[in-house]
Every structure is written in C-alpha cells, then in structure tokens.
Image (cartoon, rainbow, N blue to C red):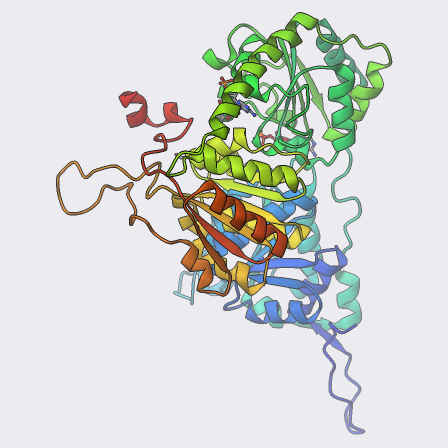
Length: 578
Ligand code: FYN
Ligand code: ADP
C-alpha cells in the first residue's frame, strides 16, 4: 500500500513502532476505494498537499483557475457518470467560490461532493480570528442536500461513505464535506486506518415503483385522446436509454425533450414534437413527465402555455415533487430505470397507438416550423446572425453525434436549443434549472476529461466572460474543446446607448470587436476569427479533427439578439417595452 507512511526502521534500542497512515492518505484511499478517479479543484492552504498526494496515488487531479469552475466540472462529471463529482477547495473564500456550483448541482439534481479544507474549530467557534475563519458547515447546510464535518482521522471513512451515499441515492444532489486542516496531519495505525474505510455497497439502490401506481398511470395514459410524453434531464441522468426509447416507440406517443434530455432519442425522431412545442403543450390532455419538474421552465404546469385542462402522470424518484405545482393524477415513484421497465412490462402487447388526428395535427405544425427553420438556416447574411452561425454547428454535430455540446448565454442558448439537433443521450450540457451563466468552461473541461470526446462549447460573449480564464486550463490539459464565442459586442446585443449621454458605455455593452480568439492563443491553443459561415465551418472542422484546444471568435451582427432571449416575460423592463 503506497499510501502508508513508512516509519524509519527501528534501532535495536527502540521498540518497533507500528506503521501509520495520515489523514491525507485516508481521504485519498477512501475515495479510491469507492472508484473515484478524478478530483477537480484548486490547491492552496490547507489542501495543497492533498492534491499532490492524490496525484501521486493515481487520482487524476484537474486544477482550475477559480473554484466555481472546478465545482461546475464536478457537477457535470456527476451528471455524466452517476458517480459523485469531487471538487476540492481551500477554506473560506475558496469554499464560497465553490458553493455556487454546489448549490447549482443540488438544484439540478447532479451528484457532487464539495470537499473544503477549513480552519480550526476551536478558533472558529470562539471567533478568535483564524486564517480564513468561517463556519463553513453552517453556511453550506441550507444550500445542499447534506453536509458533514470530520474531526478525527478514524471517521474519514464514514464521512466519505456518507457523502457518497447522500450525493447519489434518491434524488441526486450536492454534498458538502468539511475537513479541518488539523485532520490531515492526524495519524493512526495503518491497519486500523484501512479497516476504518468503507466501500459503499449499492450507493444508489433501485427504487421499484408500486404495481398499483404503474397500473393507474397506464390506465390514464390509455384513456388519453392527446397524450404527450415529456422527458427531462432526470431521464437522461438515469441511463435507461433503451427502455425510454422503447416506451416512447411502443406507445407511439409524441414526446418533448427538455433541453438536457435532447438526444435521449435523436431530435430527428418522427415522434419528436419539439418543433410543435407550444401546440402540444396547449393541446395535450394527458402528459406523462419522466424526470422533469413542473417548474418555471414548464410554466409551473398551468396558465397560457398549457391551454386547456390536463391530467398529469409524473415519474420521479422524489415523492415530495408530486403536486408541487398542480395536482398530479398518477404519480409513479421510483428510479426511472425501474419505473420505465415496469411501465413497459405493464403495457403488454397490443397497446393502441394514439389517435391519428392528434399525431397528424402535430406533424402539420412541425412541418410548418421545420420548413420555416430550413429557410432561416440556409440564409448567409453578412455579418453572421445567430441562425447562420448555428446552422454550421448543427451540421458539425450531425457529422459527429458523439461530440458533447455545452451551451450558455441568452440568445445563444435559446437559438442553439432549437437549431442544434442532438442524436445521442447526455451530449448536451447547459444552464439547467437556474438558467445560470458561468457553467461553460467548467462543464466543457469535465465533458472532455470524463468522456474523451470532442466538446463544442457554444457561448454567448457575456456568458463566456464568467469562466473565460479557464481556457488556460483547457490548454494546460490539452483538451479537445472547441469554444465558439458568439460575439455581438454585448449582453443580449451590442447596440445599447447610455441614456444620460455620459462617456461610459451602456451597462450591457462590451469593448467592440473584441478578439476572444487571442485569449486561446495566449496559452498555446488555436485561435480563429470567423466573420463568415465558411470561416466558422473550417475552424470548427479543423478543431474537431485535430482535437486541439480552439477558440473561434464568431463575429455576429451586433444588432442581432433580443433582450433576455425567449424569456422576455421574466424581465420586467423588457416585458414592459414589448
Ligand atoms: C423547437 N422549435 C423548432 C425546433 N425546435 N422549430 C423548428 N425546428 C426545430 N428543430 C420551435 C418550437 O416549436 C418553438 O416554437 C420554438 O422553436 C422555441 O422552442 P424551444 O426553445 O424549445 O421552446 P421555448 O418556448 O423557448 O421553451 C421555453 C423554455 C426555454 C422556458 C423551456 O425558453 C428555456 O429552456 N429557457 C431557458 C432560458 C434560460 O435559462 N436562459 C438563461 C438566462 S438568460 P413554437 O412551438 O411555435 O412556440 C438571461 O437573460
Ligand atoms: P428538466 O430541467 O430537464 O425538466 P428537472 O431537473 O426539472 O429536469 O427534473 C429532474 C427530475 O428528475 C427531478 O425531479 C429528480 O428528482 C428526478 N430524477 C433525477 N434522477 C432520477 C432517477 N434516477 N430516477 C428518477 N427520477 C430522477
């Protein structure tokens, strides 16, 4: 066991001392014992040695420039692998930087563990002014699924086991693990240390749905005249891809993917109703939600978006999600894999497809929207607009369906969601439940590290700014990431003026004609300035073929872009102007 600290050989005068293991190595061994092979983090007091020793012991340590991005990487790794992503930070400020990512992971139901070093309890609790003094456990608690602190080396195994179980069992989420500086130097007898570690058995136990719940759901679905299936990112997370596809295809029911469920079935699937979204939400009479919540992204299941009365079936692992916004007629509680398998088994043979007038009406709307979209995508305006630039990325993803798309921004996000078709599950990572900006480079790094596949990060120029410095991280680890910055000179667009007539530019305006590509070049990556769709296409093709870190500055018409994209109604001023 290389993790064991060798004690000097005993001299004849000395009693033979037992071999010991310290807190650093107990943490590393506990993680390894549970199959954790990567840590995303940022070294500093008191965890610098932990990062060095973890690397020495064979864990891949990916060091970032800011903890928020390390945390976002851990969260994305958790979503992609079903193993908790680990983010390691220093105390107080580093911990706080990581906390945004931890809260975001919890909100999105992504499993991750934020491990932060902390100052000494005795001093923190008496508020005597320690280095980076902060009661981190108390601060983390309301923002995550569970929070633990380990004070004694012999409890490290239990602490890490509890953190892993809390992150991945039931509804996945973020867990905080507080490790005070003193813990790392504590030692214990090596054998006892190894015996104190826990290999977590069955960390995310299957949760089988009740037979009567499955029957109730199927009866309701069968009675529908206009059924609809809505797939959310919980369905993508569950990795029950074949059964989900079988359920959709065997029922023949049209489906809508939420943004991170795109690709669970290929977006070009005949039953996809994505291009008739407004119509199906309004018209459907029975809606089966699979791993999707009726939150703001679905207008809380009511109001104009939803048109006439509906009945809902909801498949989810969290019983308390049910009835959170509107009444759910048929809850099916369990893990999505088990629930979908039970639904398939319960359907038996001879399931009647939905009425033809329903599917024909959807196809008619779809065809209209698809033809309209085709015309827009074929246009080649100069300068580029969002659609012409995205049509190039759409073709690139079609050619490399295994590539992972990361997407953030306002207009850049909204246009990309409907324009860039996805063909495989879990290939799209985006701003998720909070609509948070700043996930870009962290998610891109995690996607590349975890999958080894090409990553295309489609970034609004404002969104990119939150994590832009991580292009150095991308270059340092030579990751196959191509960042495309949609540069329209500002937040939403670049044409706002300062109403006071003063010298400062308007709050939403950036430096005009900035060259984001130079940022990548500064660290040895490839920079491309693309002013036409052809230049963008060439840059992207080369980036994917070479696997070299690349940043394409895609110059977009600065007048293109709507304030707040498609969620104008949430922006009081934009809604007023409308
Ligand atoms: C969709 N559509 C298509 C296609 N896909 N048309 C043609 N071809 C294809 N492939 C149509 C679809 O039918 C809709 O038209 C329209 O495009 C938009 O579809 P979308 O994007 O799926 O739906 P919508 O209404 O925008 O979805 C609502 C939403 C979404 C809330 C789920 O806006 C969303 O995920 N927003 C997240 C925003 C966010 O987080 N922003 C970050 C903060 S930005 P109709 O059917 O005609 O309506 C800070 O400012
Ligand atoms: P979207 O934003 O795509 O609509 P949400 O994040 O709102 O998706 O919803 C995901 C839902 O999936 C959550 O309610 C969560 O409890 C549920 N979920 C996550 N993982 C599983 C799983 N393995 N089995 C069942 N439900 C799950």
